[in-house]
Length: 401
Image (cartoon, rainbow, N blue to C red; front, side):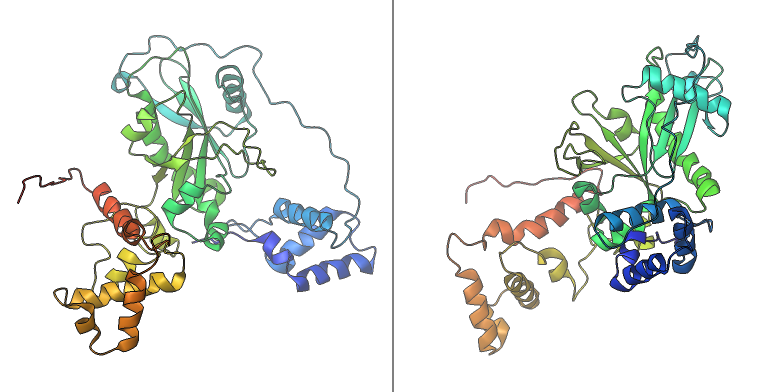
């Protein structure tokens, strides 16, 4: 798997900062900061999957390090203001004769936007008909027009994922460092437009399925590697997300209302549902994670292997002290061998183990050692086992004894 270069983290190391400062203090060699960035890309091997130098990422890291007072870069060259999006002279014509069912649409296809003509059509529809307009989209981007014999039905746009999403990241199960190294394998569906004049049952879910099938190859041809996961956000105040569920996307939680540039935690965006779609079934393994990491669905017997089940079912219980959580795992593993005996017999004369056991179960009432906290990891994994089944029977006995 192509690993994302951590440019800022690499250049932030003291030896790297000293190296860059020395280059700048030698004087004269780098008249422009872009020249410095190109040099550093070669020196530190900052290249993407296609072997292209990551100049923009290097420039961004250098600007941030300069703002922190580590060195002074050459004066920035003047840049022209942001250009206006390329548009058509008039609105895109509405499609005609669109049938009521998606299966009856003639010539339905996703057309990869790769030229100026298609880009103008994409921009025009998004600017006029999408509530968030045409963008800007960020990072690696893939755009589609939704074509049919009836006319243009809409458009889609994919771009860089959210930098951090607590619920998404918990569902994947990666660490902060793993997320930094592999975030580029996630692609965000930033724009999804079915034109207001189009009323066709099941069209949205069908398009989502078509995009999940077509995007990996188009993305790989453009950027040199295949993504593992799609993500998208649904404003639950306006939409139910039915089409996502129908296309087998998974709701994994909610956002916190923060946009990509919300550095001061103002949470100016609306809170949205987070949906994901794995493009690779074993994407966790390809990311170097355990197959049962995160909050994915489990099979009934997953994680119940002898020697490891206690850690899986009770490890990380929020008991207020990591040592207590480890003790709970040890007690559970020992009790499982002889569940019918008191712990004194299970411990086989180990006085320290017995003392630790009684300290664990005799904690004060206001401590974090409660039955709910003890069972929390086990309940979480039970729910994940239920997610992997079409039917779950919850048997409850009410008869008096």
